[in-house]
Length: 274
Ligand code: KIV
Image 1 (cartoon, helix red, strand yellow):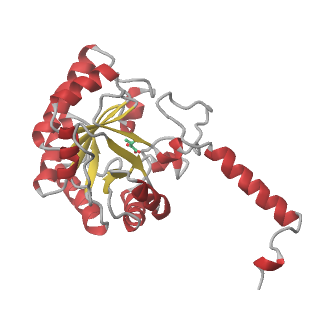
Image 2 (cartoon, protein in one colour):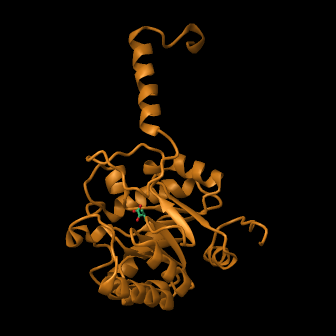
Image 3 (spheres, protein in one colour):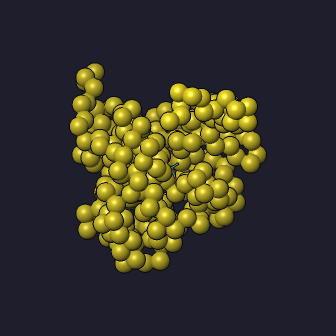
């Protein structure tokens, strides 16, 4: 086994090297300076400014409504907190689907206006020309296959995708197309572990799983989910979400103690006053 790869700054080259060495890649989302800084200090390799911010930050029911300006606003804050990790920005719905020209302009805006180091684009073969053009002007692209949340209304549910048959065959084809184009990594969301394993073995790009089992080259979670802060309206979290903190309980108890202290005239004390 190789000793752990020391990486001063995570780049596309470093990601490829991690895959080659069989060292797993840790990815989390972030939407603000403070959490991005903590993630970076903790050794997270890639920080994704995910359009999941539409759900967990803006309180929307899908990711469709978040705008490019909003993504750029959050990406700027995240980049200010990061030294080592690679920062990737999710391209929001309708910022890249209309034409390759518009995609180039909008991905270019992200790269020009933030310090991010790449973009994420959902979709397979139908997005090939767009991804080719974006890569052609030197922007690293992370692909995204499987349960692509921007297509939720077409899917009709958040169930596991590509369980077999045509959809699984197409996903493998799509992964190979994106890989040939040169995406540096590929998110596989909510697909069977067996399929994710097959894709991982078939592509040079680093696969990053979310609900895609243990065989991917890396794993990603939405940061508010893993902190136990975000709760779906149904109260049920998907089984792939491992909670590393009982965030809601801890935060709520802190806020309740604060309210009690203020109401009970216990805050501020003399030592906390001028
Ligand atoms: O928007 C997001 O956070 C994502 C990840 C969950 C992959 O796309």
